[in-house]
Length: 305
Ligand SMILES: Cc1cc2nc3c(=O)[nH]c(=O)nc-3n(C[C@H](O)[C@H](O)[C@H](O)COP(=O)(O)O)c2cc1C
Image (cartoon, rainbow, N blue to C red; front, side, top):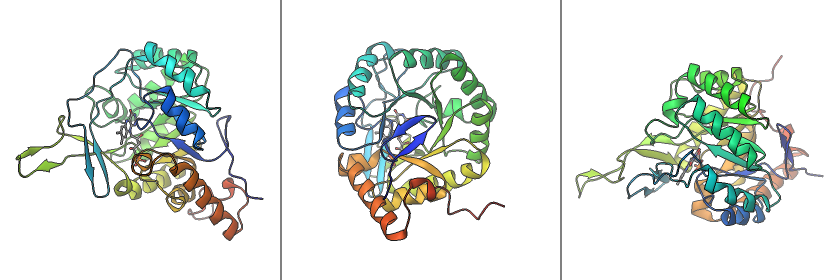
């Protein structure tokens, strides 16, 4: 019989799909809706120490093959957001708390506070490409990635996931640094840094000018990143970027991902995307003689001696 369940760092998921940070996760109610729609886990919006408005609008440009966003990490701050997590937990699936901070001390403090809210794991946003002083500005050098992970690990006792940026010449070096720092899993990838210009207005469309590209257009970058990271580290890899059907998810799994996250696919298809991806994975497994997700993880790599 086909088994879709996966276990990541002790977290038991009924299937390998997770809600990616930043889409439909600003409130407990919306995360609950995603959980009820069939996601195996949900990741919260990235939360900081203080309330933050984010960037001026326009914050999102819809493109043919994805989205360009420069939300700028708007959030109410960890103390207020804690109530949303309580509600999300009622969905009965693991809740992963995403955090961002400007240095090791701030990130460690947030990791500790996030654990107190009752989340099952912490995801470090080391990769947002459009928030000055945060995200990719913290996550682009291996030394800082290692140090941040070390501090976050010391500050909490739940699993710590490091979410990495593809806007680098070597994402596997960042993954190795996260592993050295004690991260329990890698999440790859966040959005690709990009810009859209209106020829009519003769100016960049986004209020912040620069944003992050997501959706189908970035899937080959995400798959390649997971493939490289799988060969570079021993800790589990979670794949994200451009997934909206079973085949997309299978690409990531065969590249080496133990689970996948979906963001823009929820934007374009609604919460039904989780059930659809699961059904299509299951059908593929039935047709190809797989009974467990783990049998497919990393099979696109040459056999290891
Ligand atoms: C509108 C929007 C907001 C996002 N906000 C966050 C965020 O707060 N934290 C984070 O780590 N990633 C954020 N992301 C990135 C996604 O979690 C994901 O890594 C990226 O969009 C690629 O996956 P996708 O193609 O399935 O959307 C955001 C993406 C979008 C489209």
